[in-house]
Length: 89
Image 1 (cartoon, one colour):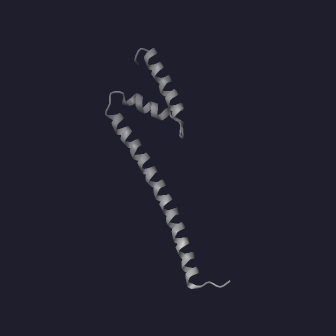
Image 2 (cartoon, rainbow, N blue to C red):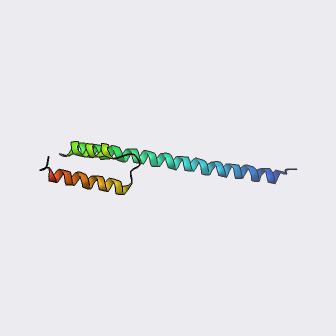
Image 3 (cartoon, rainbow, N blue to C red):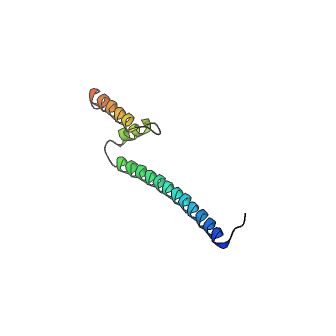
């Protein structure tokens, strides 16, 4: 199989384009991870300034990794019910 100059340039440009897509995907993933971590830090800093920070941090520690929104909502509802039924303490 014989490659002329135009075919070689097409192959190089295709490989370069695929590399750019892979690089962009990795950068987007890293940016999303950094944004998630920054949001967690902001939540913790905000919670540390509130009256209920101990309860809030306890709630955060009970949330399992990769929990769905429904699971988190159920957890917060159970905690709220327990809080109000126990006489605010």
